[in-house]
Image (cartoon, rainbow, N blue to C red; front, side, top):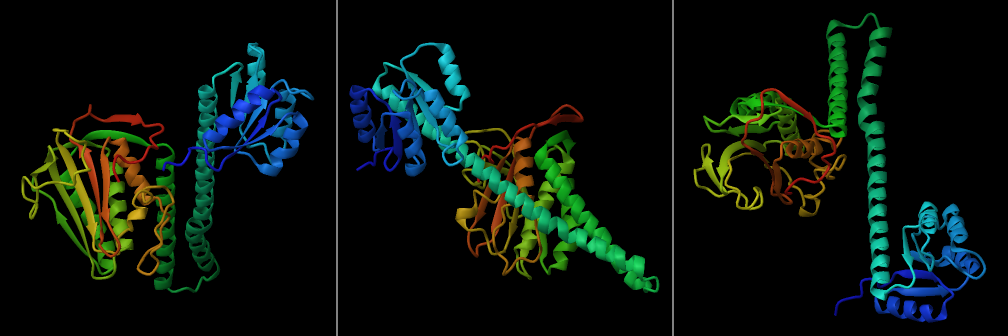
Length: 409
């Protein structure tokens, strides 16, 4: 049996019309709500902080005081100020409606009204309030995560720079080898800071400069630039890229950053001796039309990677590792800024949790698709699908707010 939509939610109703009280109580109870009825403003103020209702339905014309005064006191009390208010009134004056909304009420319903409309207003206010609370919680979490990044990941390289600089400044008899080592530490830490700041700035205000690019040359260049890091972690890097790939409209700097982050992520979570593979193919109509060794033409691609029924050509890039994998419950969150999977037992490098967020932002900015194939102890494969098209030469634009999630994940 389906549960009533409002089950468990307490609603405080302040209304003195006895006939209306009867209908309000019955209608709310039939919807699964738990109404508490009061008939004065003082009772409303007294009970609000005690029962903590999900919403307060407040008549403007109460016998002891007007509803506006009650609402003003509710909104000035930190204990109950966040509870949404729905005004009921028999007045048709637009000024009254404006007054109520300016006092912080979420909605205004004029008498007489039909019960279906009343219930719809209640549900709409509750839904809007829940969405607002969810967004507030997400912002609070992002703020806490940002503070953690500033405190930990930014402080660490700053500490290294400070300590190394102090040693160089105070010890003039230091050996040349030790001096070179300290200078290298300073440069490495400065590079880490620059990398983090660049990612934060890109996520805050993504822009792109599109140009006709050669994806094969770019991918091989990125792989070669990553090879030393891969080898330092005793890993193997394999590239499977066709000899010919069509040109594509890309911001090359952002493309390098995105693919580089995918490789870095694979390095962090792949045990020594593992393999990282970079693959590129061209697909049309759900099948590979141009592949590399081991990826035959006509082979299928993941069903959810491309828009259904889209016959246009796409460049598909996959970065696969033989690491510990990502649990399915984390797939939707790995592209959120600052989110990090707790895998300290195999993780070989520190991180901020921005890399995959940068990848997702890059893919959205290029109107692409993103997908994850992974599971515990199964390794991870992340697909990027980018439409093959050409823009005007050297085309730049600011992307504004592109914070919607990836098309697939």
